[in-house]
Image (cartoon, rainbow, N blue to C red):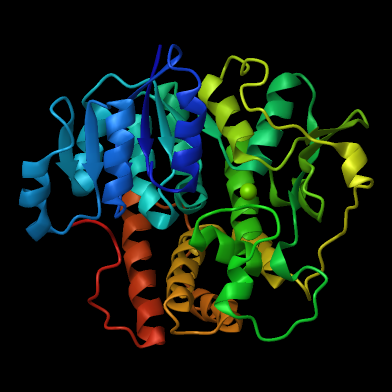
Length: 394
Ligand code: MG
């Protein structure tokens, strides 16, 4: 029985993870759940899966006493805030942590998960983007496996694991192109941006898909996950979203991983790793006859400038990935709150990135410091009071 903690269980990935686990009560035991603001859903999940510990990260201090009094059931311990999150990872014996907290708030929980000695099924790409080498080094030292749940990286992880002796010439991440692929550029409303053609996801990642910052983050994520230089990481626009990742080996063969665009497939492969999920554990299949054709397009800089930015960021290293991730998160929040237009997101990120900072290998303390400085600078440029706290720590 695998003991699992899900951080961010009320989001899209969290709910899909529970949907897979629900079908295998004899294989998985949910020992911990965390949610930010969807208290009602978290309560429902707790009633169904009966975890030992639940952490609420979004509850303000003044509400905590009432929440604690009402509780989450007799058998479930209720914790609060980032401290609660940390305690939850070290309390019960945990075999696998599913990390699905969106955005830069996933950074510290990723480190705690690895420190706890549990394997890490990672859906939050920002943690790897901000502190990639630190996190992968720590995982290696602790004998912990990081299993990517991001569909492209999961597809490539499966190929690479199946052919461990072949050497990689290049990997390809595919991108649907987002809601604006082959559409005339005009002014984009929030509604246009949130209407992703294929994937139903959280709001931040849906906006990131429209700007292609999501793919830019994925290039950086792949660099750290697979230990590949930027020139060995390619991106192809593939509107049919059947191929999720491809690996070209140096013997001339390219192996592609195809599936229906259903996150539960990647999640199931992560939950069962190193075993394979049982047959039909996710009853969804790919019908190539229905698709008829698969097409691949080279993304142009003109159409997707965020991708060029990703390669530049990897070249420069140091604080650049941290600043990219944080500035983008703040800009996306500003867009979702109606403070800026969609077209202003990327220019704002670039403006924050333009501030030169020394590039060296950072410590985790430096990553946190630069992250906070970047948050303040972005908010200053947005005209938001600089002392406003964006993190969920209370
Ligand atoms: Mg992805």
